[in-house]
Image (cartoon, rainbow, N blue to C red):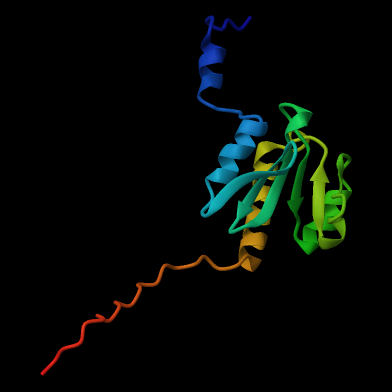
Amino acid sequence: MFACPCGAIARALARYHFSMPDVDWIRKLCLSFADVTEDMPWGDDLCFKIRGKIFVGVVLSDGRFPRITLKASPESFHELLEVEGISPAPYVGRYKWTQIASSNLLQAAELESLIRQSYEMVAAKAPKAKTVAAKPKKKSAKRHRK
């Protein structure tokens, strides 16, 4: 028989961090992207925005593994709808937005890829970041007399 020292398996597994895509995981991922802000415009819906445009919505009242709404590419939209638990998002499904029934429905890497893709598509169409232009110096109101 094979004997394994107590804790050897635990130490081996400790090297790998299998993070679950819960609310905290989603929030940390979304806020790691450039120019992202968070907002709660509709009650318990936490929205992540890029320059004012939503790219991910999360329903906080669902608990640890909430529903997620995000934009899908035209190519992947119909493929995603074939997965049980993924449907067109209410009100915006016709614009290729999907709703995932639970954040742990997909593997973390797949969900991360979809969130990143949503961010990139929305960022491409969001208003460009405003740059602060240097203000011209005001001319002095004093007149020089000769």
